Amino acid sequence: MIEVDSLEKRYGALRAVDGVSFQVAAGEAVALLGPNGAGKSTAIKSITGLVRPTRGRVRLAGFDVVKRGDQAKAVLGYVPDRPYLYPKLTGRELIRFVARLRRVPDPEGQAERWLDSFGLRDAQNALIETYSHGMRQRLTFVAALLHDPQVLVVDEPMVGLDPRGARQVRDLLRSHAGRGKAVLLTTHSMEVAEAVADRVLVMHRGRVVAGGSMADLRRAVGRDDADLEAIFLQLTEEAVAGAAPASSSEAPASSSEAPASSSPWLEGR
Image (tube, rainbow, N blue to C red; front, side):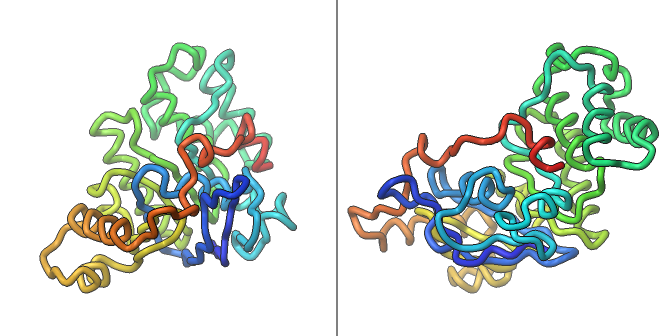
């Protein structure tokens, strides 16, 4: 469902993403982990069509993100790390707007169902500018899931959520994959990655340095009882130790955040 083949993204001489390849199958949830500056956000923006790769190919449900962008984005649900929500709309108005862009059958019924599911019914007629950060995050999930996307990409899903909301999102991601959809998430929470992901990919300096199930990763580090945090620290420390001192593959923080569309829903029409 997600096919990433030799993906590269350069900013001048710097490589934010350097020859990354992986796949996410239908019914699978994959977590993309890495320290700050590893290239995760740039990879995600390339996968979702918000930046154009320098080289390589990304396909979503068989559609090339560059050559067949409209079809690729039609099967995509995207929750960015810093979502933009129109502040002068109410929550319900935003959902109706997104449902029409996505051509969702019965937009009123879908809005009702999802707002209720995410505990936003009481605030549905309030302006979004009055919402807390956690409420905005939940509303972003509603907008991403309205059309039941075949591919769901989530960048730092737990930011601003209370424990109940975080658990709901974990369950939702597992449920979405369980219905035969593909889920790709980035997170700094090892607990979330362990709870949600079937496989984990570890990025460092623009490259995937390890990947597989927990059993695979434990074998890779030679520690049968290691948790994901210990595995992650060992793998990234080994990658640092083995890197050339003047490596050009790691973009600075300002470079890894490429300009994105002002609204992911408009991009996904």
